[in-house]
Length: 148
Image (tube, rainbow, N blue to C red; front, side, top):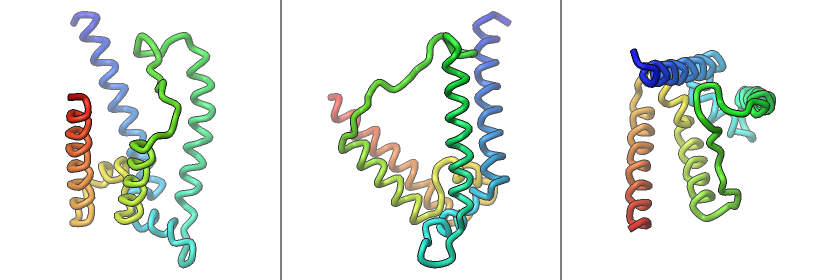
């Protein structure tokens, strides 16, 4: 096996391992259950704070992780860090965030937990996944028209 094929295999395996750990974390924390998300949003009723603790754990982990990772001159499995350069808020970002939030609130799923829940496919989950894929195609089409 050539060095470039070996490196590609290691990157792919690392990506799958990270996805597996993420999916397991979602399942163990109960975030694949849309009722948890809807319960978190129901502040006037039967409020469920579970999501707040999961998000808090993610923020702490990310805060520590970024500080450790950026002490390195380059990523372990890549040539350079690929960081976003755009820093301003614009209509596309705010509109996309609003659509994401509306979809998440209506369905109880965001993309990660939705994909992790495919094994227990239900009609609401199928509807959410279908509209998510439709949204990707619409966004791609708008981006292509804008670049043309």
